[in-house]
Length: 388
Image (spheres, rainbow, N blue to C red):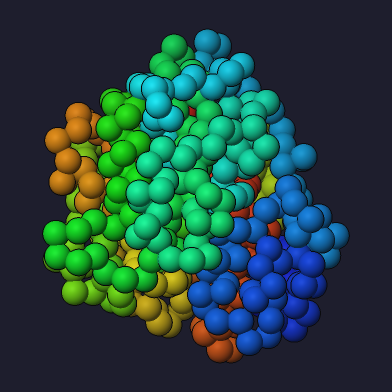
């Protein structure tokens, strides 16, 4: 059982984020480095932090964390190793190409980890192709300063194969939590919803996966655990609280678990990069009911030992976007037989110690230390779902 506090952070990250704050140069966003940074600033830091950039170098120099340069190659089963296309396939008129599977990830470091595992030799930041199809139209709904507006694109992508199946890997710059804070007018859609619908209709996949980091709910979660959920649920208490789907859940079909045992074996190649105090090997949590599913909040929430955000009992992990996929699927006629949320625990339950901002800062620094390494685990599970 793990409930992280400042002492845990010092033992596993090499510093106490509250007593000895990380240097300003280790932040992607200057606002997040301020002692008075609010929760929105801290949330944005998680999205933008780049372990392969200058802030990553500063973070590694200060902490005990390690970058993906320490990645150990994964001993894939014969004939099933992920292969990146030498040149990404393209659709017509700026659209994505069709494929058997569509895998979508979100933060900068999630993109690095996913591409290191599933598109070897092609990095999400440096190599993936920009995706701008209908950007001018969709971005009209977005607020100034959000990631997509700053990047002038909806995302970036590459293509590859797993066991003969064609895959599109998409690093999204559109985020439910960042695009806008205005609920849609009656009959209208959210910009992130528009992006989801568009890329699904273009790729026409048999399976869709949304993947990346999440906060573990409950003390049983450890960094690196992976939740595989065909169920996603909204927990909207803020700007989307009046929407009809504010607490709605959505369900897909069950996962094919044939390669889950192999996936757990493959975790071992890089497990030593996870927190040294992990008490066991990362596990795969299959969500068969709503209380075990992936929970999508419309606020920056994380589980605390005093259950400040009332997340306990609502899901196995919380994040800020996956239920949009379920919402889109419920509203579209696009042929998507099956979809999953595959979320790795990047920060465990946080001890209710100090102020709520202190707790958020602790969770964020744990993410910055181990988010990419826990995302290696979820990328392997994505492989298992596609290759099965």
